[in-house]
Length: 230
Ligand code: GLN
Image (cartoon, rainbow, N blue to C red; front, side, top):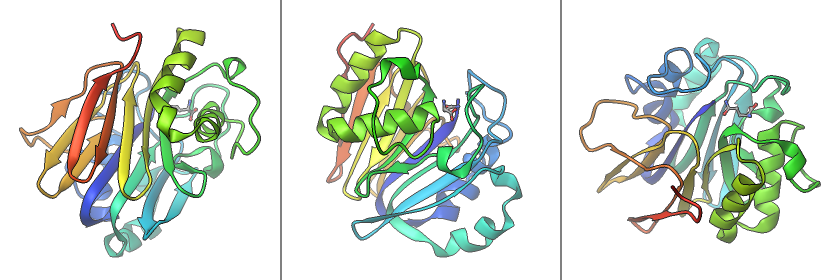
């Protein structure tokens, strides 16, 4: 399972969000604290952010810990909406930059923590890679982000072994699902962080229960059960 992180709030640098926290994505790439599947996340990484309404991405198939170019530039890249991830490839999936989250349709940035049997997904033009997560992202984009909860519930029913933690944002809204893996939230006056696991030991982190949908916008956050929740 990969680990992902999203931020919606005042502008913050990619370094502040991913590299500097004591248990941020950089440390999670080699020493995650709550990972249930896989030991480390060495199969690539991606950092996406909104520049106005334009999503921009930097992705790689190499481990985040070795990327001195990203470490050099990340302090200078700031945004009020960020989606980033480190990847542990599912067996059989290609290790290539185009298989690393975040994926995009030009409006949203989307990351998937988990695994899905692609046989249950419709054939979808426009997937960035043959990786299950890329095909799932294309399916979600095609169905429309407004139906994210329904799409996850349906795919979860079609593939009972699927793990479907999604994190997506469009610059002014951030959505996430929990379906088989961990997700934590830190909501403050400055904004909302959603992360596969807390990046520090701030006591304000809360765990999102399994099979829920998180919807953050305009400083408000709702957490609602998905259909079929246990
Ligand atoms: N199945 C996806 C991949 O192979 C995501 C894996 C994960 O969450 N570790 O990249």
